[in-house]
Length: 310
Image (cartoon, rainbow, N blue to C red; front, side, top):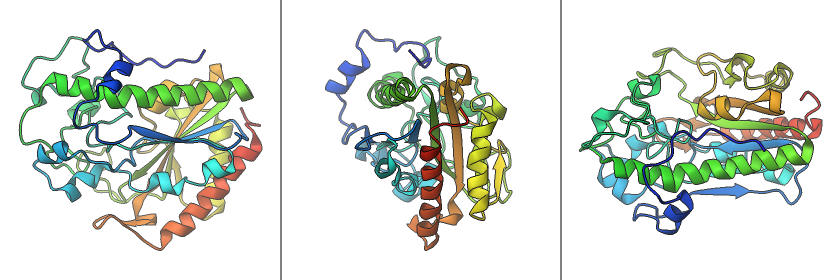
């Protein structure tokens, strides 16, 4: 069975399932949704980990930022851009919680010790480049660089978020990937994201205007080149400027699920937000409809190919 390395176990004798049944007060909405097709028609799974917009009131109260500023890390409307997938025969997993609250595209415990009032357990990764940028599992800043919290956190807070949000999300994604691999013999996971049109202060390409779409396949390690080429050709045919792996080669999900030798391929898609939304007001623009229609063509092509390149 395909499994993903979830890192060190939480420092508690409670399972994440028990954590869900005794959810803390800030767990005010469902953790995620799986939009399933009536019948899965191809070996493709779509996931949107950063489009969640259910902001717990207690999180807002603990932040020095206003609610609009907190949304700077959000991949707004990405789940809606790929909403055609279930009707066309592919499942779509979407997080309901916001990225600024907990980022499931990180290791389970990438934490900045300067954010916490107590000492972190030894299994916590405190030295990753993501932590250094302030964008660990529990982020210190939003993508625009603004500091999120008005006081230090305690590790129990991070542990609760990991148990209640992170682990259930990845358990659901792992089930979708493994079920698809068993049914079709292989699986292509499309991890769906958006990016600011101009790189921000925490980005390696800060200040630069970006192309329309970036495909991340970890430089070929997470996905067969023929599959990423199939996606690139489809998008280029619709008039988009597409780049591969720069500035986003793929993060935790792509690296940890992508295992071509096990017939599981993972490809990250980053979409320039200026194509479909106003980045200041968080409102859709007329470009949203065209982009969604073009992505529907991409989705149809991937499903109809039934993994011919895998």
